Image (cartoon, rainbow, N blue to C red; front, side, top):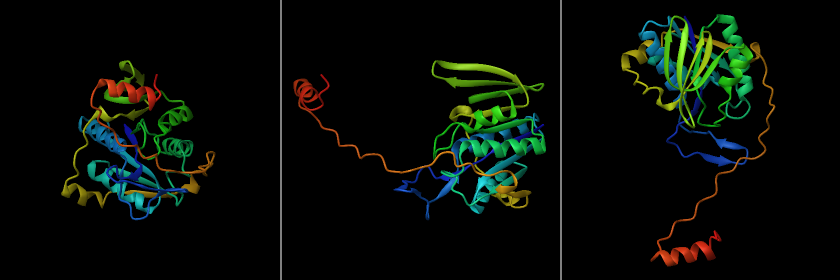
Length: 250
């Protein structure tokens, strides 16, 4: 069984980004693999260690620097990688439907049995690609997975919903998006980082798989408003007075 794992390169979560009117300033900013995508890679590796899958292929879309995220996925345990290259900004011009269309073509080309991906990326938070991909392929899907079990070609997924946990089953092939509590990704060891450099990495220009639709246009980007500092009041009476007269809550 072959598994395709989608990986996205994003701004490191520990970095405070600089916001410009035309988008986020990426100049000199530390980039890393999207945390939810890393969880998806880890889950694929664990399934392979259980001998439930035979091959893991990581794929990313973006500029040449995106190969760094693929090498990280290879160091974690992926067998091969595919880099769909484009100079378009992946947080603006490359939108979820574009990504889903590209992944669908790769799935059809290479006959994957399962697609794993993060539930969302931490840059745009769309949470749409997995669902769109399942629709394009006419495959069953399970989103927000916190536990995955595969037995005899049947995937059982426990997914997190507002009311608690929901268990779903479907026959492979299918699409699963991974949530935060699915696993804790391992650290890539130095020997595995060195081995990753010799693993196969296929490069495909994006225009060979399709074109960008640019159906959504970003007209303005701005930082959130700075919150005012809190205040300490002397007693409940003063608190009620401020809530009534200043906050106008009642």
